[in-house]
Image 1 (cartoon, one colour):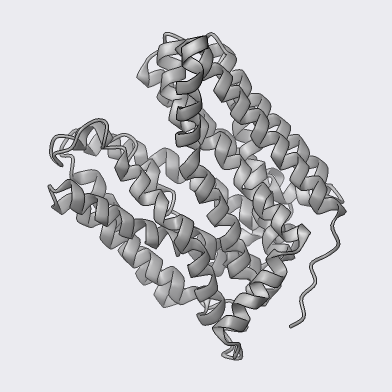
Image 2 (cartoon, one colour):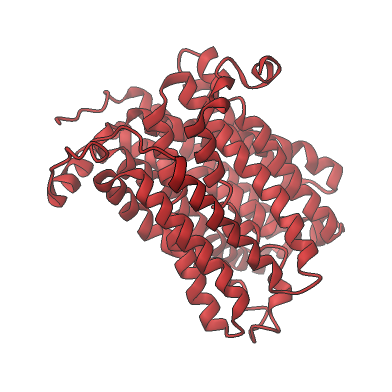
Length: 416
């Protein structure tokens, strides 16, 4: 563990704790909702009887429910506990995802993906909340960073396996979602409910009172500014993923394989950067300036990718973008869990995660519309570059403004 401490920081011992190990195990599944499908979309067009224009709805069907359901699951987790919500999410996520392998009806597949999106809403936000229940300070930041690192590894490994399996049958990649069932069994057997009011059975607030408490907290400037900031990195990440292949193939005269390598480099960059969340928290008295620097790196890196004329020029940009993204999401989540009172922690964290899902959903639509408008006077290539750079700069600027609003705001007030 000493060698790991030299990489992660002094709180690397969190990896030995069973509660963290179980949450990390549960966290393997949520990133696969979109990452696992990415390499197989083209292969399901014919068997599901759809078209290239419509097959992308399998992605939207998964992301859309979380915008509404993530805040709901947060309220439920605050009221009834984290463990039952995580178990529900694992079972639904696995069952709905696996079931896609047994249908040839596109509408049925869309419905199953909607259900899987509901399962996702009960996983990532509640796992993040549980880490906030279990740990504090540098240890909590380290745990959040390592969780995000696990997401990056999951998004790198499983899509590669899916790419191999789809060569045997389009159904086989969806069967990978069945790994959720043994994970649920392990979590059910060994995961202990974190100490929360709901866990102790002493949360006798009515639902209206619970929602009033959430509104009272979320309406304070420190809270809503962080919730807004939490959504900004998704503009950059989803914007890159959406236009990565177009930029590499059409603007750089590269190949689809090179686009895949660029995406892998981005995932590895954010996975490695996320491991440093605990060290950053321990090193700096305030996380303001590290977060400002991460916003600059993320926005500048994405801008360089969209402006680059060749793949070698894009690589430094993608490394900077990935590093900024990994630090931002790890520390943003740590800040939100730390500022939230225990009684509304799940709800507040879920509002932040819901904001991230909302920006993920609207980014492809907004960028596509802007490119269509700009293509007339500027041409397609220049419009893609311009919109990509503008998206990066706006996201970075909004993030920085929100950070200074948080810095100037008074601490969260909550009368329990």
